[in-house]
Image (tube, rainbow, N blue to C red; front, side, top):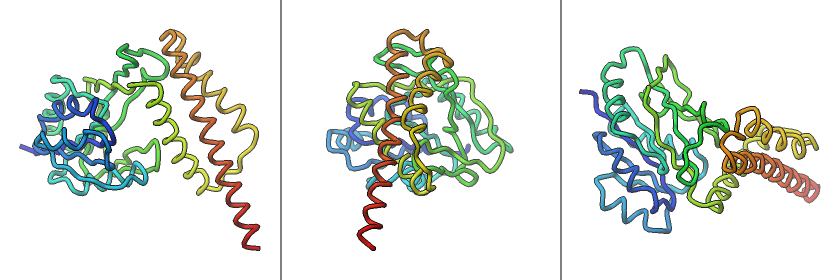
Length: 256
């Protein structure tokens, strides 16, 4: 039997980590990679049978790849702390890995919940990620919105991950700000030239995309909130990029 390692990243996840840990118990090994939580997350993890690793967070790919290297097994199941694997999905993962043959990983669709209500549109209907993979052929790349880059064929599982992303609006905005800051750094390193188009048009276009094109309007008020929050994240991304460029210009003047 091919053995499996489940990995869960955490930072102040005391409200959600128990459910994620429980849904990972089907794996032969559970690793929690923590970014030095300040709440009761660590105590909860220590009460489980998970291996606890702690590392200062720098970017998503580096954090994930660090934990993957520490795993005892090649087949990895990645579970975010706000996600739960159903029993049906657990069984499907075990069967898929045993019969993987030439496949190096598997996409899994997610069911997105916002304040306990399932979102069926707003772009969530197409949300799938490689969450089961053989680390010998797969690696995370990208500072934010990181993704697995597989060296081989990838399958798709039928059952879905339950994704309980929203706890409070404040936490949701903090998460968006974190993603926006990392994306701004990524664009800064690429030398993107920022224009009014990025500040004015792109946030508005993101709202239109999710609320109308991705049918967020059918998810009611929550669809509006999610679409608005995503457009806000785009705006903050480019404002942060603008600030980075201003600091660069100031430093260049001081050097002269």
